[in-house]
Amino acid sequence: MEMLKDPPQYEFYVFNGSYDALVRSVSLKVFDAAVGDVTITPERIMEADFTMPYAQSGLSLLMLSENDSKPIQWIFLEPLTKELWFATVGGFLFTGFVVWMIERPRNPEYQGSRLRQFSNASYFAFSTLTFSHDQIIRSPLSKIVVVVWCFAVLVVVQSYTANLSSMLTTNRLRPLVTDLDQLLRNGDHVGYQGGGFTRSFLINQGFPLNRIKSYNNQSEYADALRKGSKNGGVSAILDEVPYLTYFLSNPQYKMEFQMVNRMYKTLGFGFVSCFREHEGPQIEERWLSSAATSVGDSPISGFTALTLRSFSGLFIVTGCISALMLLISISRLLCAKYTRVKGPELQNDDRDGGDNDRGDGCMPDQHLHEIRGDDSRNTYAGDEIGTDVRQV
Image (tube, rainbow, N blue to C red; front, side):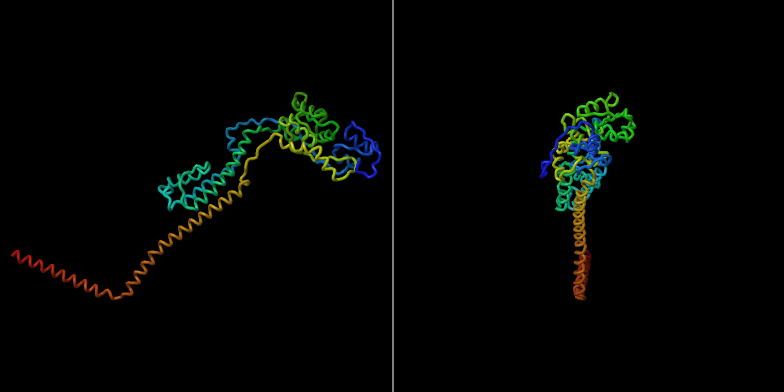
């Protein structure tokens, strides 16, 4: 009203009835406009005009949280999904295989019997988990593979440790009931805020009148939930999300109660009058922002294990680099083997070519050798004759 150039004369009246009665009073011209947290519903739109919603709303359930006290002896397996566990073990084995292939030709640590080679390669790969590998690697290609894999292991280990720590240290709370259908089947009592449209909503969902109860403030909410349906209370409170958000912003209640996911959407809060559009965010920021930000501090209802998709990029990069280093090593080995085989062949070809160039030139030497051989035999024969003569 203050923003109008010529503000009219007006008076404020406190209305103690229900929200439906307030909207009906505006439609009957009892009031010219209504200001408050009036939820926009299809039934109310038929009776009066609303402004643009200044806050989003919806219906949700408020209930006690149950401490999840299941056995935790195998909880160390829960931070990672099965797919990620298999991928991590496969990464260790693949890294050990790549290092073994690169180091085997020239590193004595990876030579010997097959069992010795496999044990050394596996020990080296899995020891990178604690960065305690003490085996010497000589090839620069192996060092690149190990450095990249150690970085990947560091990321996975840190993420695993953080998730496991939150599982062990955070009070794991979960709601007893997750939807209205479960409450209806169990025969539980449900509470609602007096004067709101949630009463008609529960009746439309099939709840009899003797199983729904009206409450007006936060303390009544808490007391009714603590008692439970069997002791004169309720098992859950159905109310609009902004109210439940504000309820959970209270440190006295946020660790004891919990809100489940929104189940029924409404058009939001609006005034039964016309006002400037830019005022809506300002109103929500002023009255609901502090409560809305505190929802994230409510107890954690469950943990999401780390999936393979979360680290798919890391494993792809690591695998590609390791495969590239392995291909380079194999190419170098094949090139060196080809060079060793080709070298002796070239030397033999050069020697054969030299003999062919000399042709018959070797025959005089051979003839001379034969002559010398004959002379030697003659001399040997002469010596034998002389010996025989002397003996006679």
